[in-house]
Image (cartoon, rainbow over all chains, first blue to last red; front, side):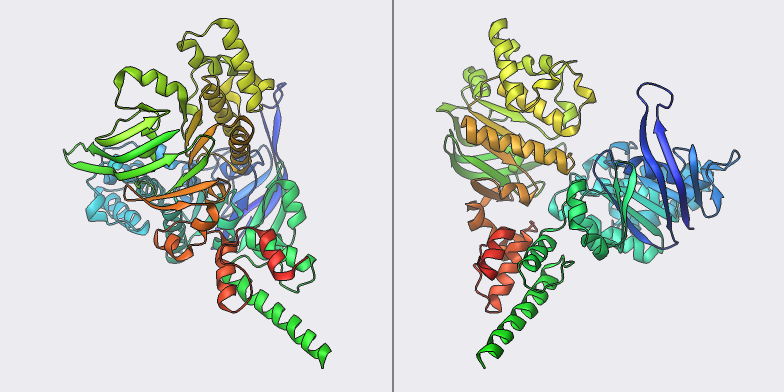
Length: 293
Length: 275
């Protein structure tokens, strides 16, 4: 289920005075089972890029292939691609429209022409996968649910298509801290339990850092950085130029390093920072003590 | 500016049950304050805020805005001129086809003279840094710009106080910074009282006072340092704690001399390394 993007360039409203190039020569590969974060400011090309990954936008220049299928080929089974690559848009709850939770989740699989029993099984599994109690919510109106739950139902609707790749565009936007933490935990569980590839699109560095191993940083339609999270954090200056802040504790570690305290500049959790600072202070103390001796 | 005494607000749900959204709140907000209200969805913070400009009136208790009781139905317009509201979704607040017409909507409805409207709109757009966009179509603006236009629309009413209900929840980091910067400037330079309802701990830290709500009640109220240094309490409420503050307390437990209310990177660097 590898996703291969090669030299992808995309221009909106091509050939008009309003032409705007959203992607410039973008290349990367995402392997089966990876958990990748795509980060960048509004207008950096993130959304245009992910719409290419399930063929909502067909490649004009360059190539996109999913599982060996060239999405630019004239005869490509778009339906099969969209079944494999599930895309959860921003504020997906705005797209929930059925009268009951179960009916809304069933909408996708029903369009696949499955039997009623198969649809029912998928709905049940998808609602369980987002961590909601199927029996308790199936008959309820989606609008009686909390904002966080409603969003989970929208995600369940995509999961019911049993995609191999799940792409989430700003999944936590607008949630309160509890809703955000719960949703991120659910996404982590889906990744681990379903064995799928997950691509998390966000502009929140702190949030993405805790979730993924690999980060792709987009800037003005290009890939500015691509690598393990900690390697990306070493590029604090470049990130700042791009308008993306590193986590607060990474900033602290960097400032301490500048001032001569030997701490790892890629820490981002409280526990890591505590261990690093204590070790570095301890060494300083020992050195001072040594000097006295 | 705003005085709340024993305020309780009960909603009737569709099933006919009663839901107590605000439960016996007492609160005083002085002119010129910048107050952030944090708390979860359902904690009652938005319901409370809607009492500040009489969008809701008390089930019991009293609310006074600039000395006028919000239960005094005849003086509703006076109250709403004094306290303007900005909501979460920028797209739901825009009513006109150009930015300046949008900002003029409020004063036009007040029957303000055209020349005066012109002056107010120009000033308001300038105050939010949107004067260059006066003749632009609002729907083509970014989220942050739309929210600044919404704030300009409120400013054109010449309010003494602005209440913002999660104005940055739907914005990206750049948009959030634009809006927060605008709010801070209006408070500092124009002396406008600001009540900011937010989920973002980073924004609440910037206020002069932080109020935490839970189950319809005020459970914490103090300066940002006083509130955010109560790490354990905030975690119990599932609210965000500044990572620096949490680190400071964990280092302090290990005997490192840092104060438990450290809030910023620079404060921490100072304490650990001096100058």
